[in-house]
Image (tube, rainbow, N blue to C red):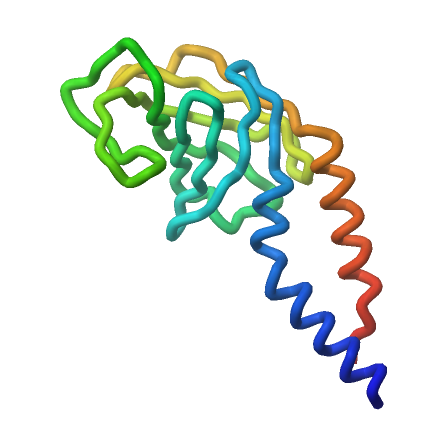
Length: 152
């Protein structure tokens, strides 16, 4: 009986922490430095990279069968836009652009190809990401651990 209770408490603890672990281990080496799946706000995934933040609409909560998504980046740039967008700290910035991404495989870890632009321009500049192997190993170990938790 005590073993079952301990298993239940452990399962609840692990399941309560799944979103943070799932987000934290999505890390890619990219054309513009390391990209980290930082957080989510509503349906928007928020990624960070050395020069700023990427907001991807509709990606939050999607962990498999990812396809094509659109959003915007905000960060360091010499190009100033006529309009502003929210940056990673909640402030408005006039250094931003459009961002479109396509995940190359349906399952984790997922490399991606993206295009970006300045301001409202059509995304034409290339930005590619390759998953970090260490993050993939950590996720695989975690999923194996969760699968071993006894079901009651």
